[in-house]
Amino acid sequence: MPFQKYPLRMIVALTLILFVFFLCGFTKKAVNTENGLYQIDIEMEEQIHVGHNSMKMRIEKQMDKQPIDQDAMIEIVTWMSVHEHGTKVSPVITPLGDGNYTVEMLNFTMPGPWEILIRISKDDKEDTAVLNVSVNGEAKKGGMQMDSGKKMMGH
Image (tube, rainbow, N blue to C red; front, side, top):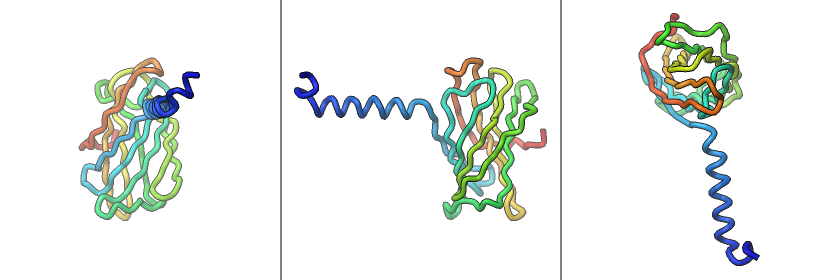
């Protein structure tokens, strides 16, 4: 039998296939906020599409790498700067504890370049980050690129 003749090779090959399969669907990135107060670790589907998307975030203080408290105020806005519009849908941010959050209803209304604007407020300090994403009309295309930026959320 072929499995008995090369069992180690088969195990290694199957492990690699499963590893690639599970990693290809998501992108993990880390970005520092504009003023360097926080680091945001993001996990998001690599294939960003028109409609509702979701992501996971872990936010920690840049100075001591401690997770932010649950009482921090977090605001997320999707913005298409090339057309100067956002969406009417507000993302739903759910704290999970230990600096971890899920973000649901991350809405994009059309294909093209979008920004995900994240504002973190805690103890009278505020900092922002901008994540640039590429949204395609089909669920199987698109991608994510992240940058910290100086864009304000007063849109």
